Length: 319
Image 1 (cartoon, rainbow, N blue to C red):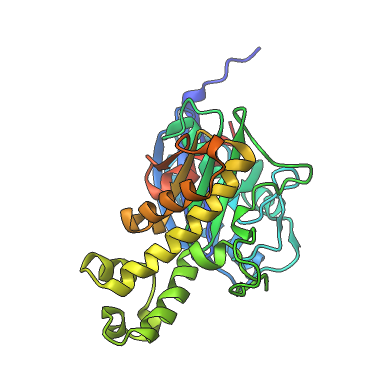
Image 2: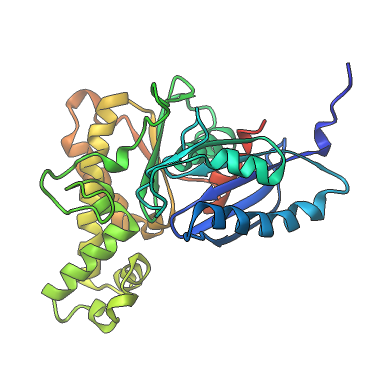
């Protein structure tokens, strides 16, 4: 039997987001040898795969003399672990069922495995981050959308068809805000994502003319500018995060009573708001929990760099 030299093997981990795609070359120890990001090209899946190849073949080429690319792992919205397809992703413009894993494998000439982007982040945290040693936790990613990965008994839950864990699309306010892509009314993603925060901020600043938020042009209002105003003490911006935190907390209470996790891990750009959003989230979670579950579940920020958790988790699919 030939001896396999693992030190020579590398995996390519890719995290596809609605706005940006992050990637990294990772060895079997979980060390990221090189990483970067690019805009998610949305014209067509074929155009995007070509753009990925143009960028990543250069990165892989830098290490090809001393390393062998063992495979590619991808975390993407609505990616099916079982089939390697992306199916009707709400935050990507590609409609229908796309055989993305097969397209990548054929383009790069190596095996490709895929999972939901939040599942990849959960896997990264479980192996290398804040969830090390935990067997029951929920990963919530707060970015352009709201993703989730549910770990129970040390295993990611995929369900019978590979799509379990779409907590961002659960209804938290029946008849509420209409989602911009799915048409569903009152989903968590419509309120707690960066996109949802932007919508809330635009509505609230119209009601309060003295808010600092009114100094920004309409197109410049986003979660980042809301945070900047909140740090400066703007009451409207603080209320935007309080309201968002309330919606998160109410949803968390439901999630906790469903799977009784040890912790809820929070990951993504929105968590930069810190206590502005987390204090109300914790308060409303505890307020809405059945007494059996109160004061048992930690809200924990990711210990990994925002890009690293998903890259590491995606690359681990290869190993």
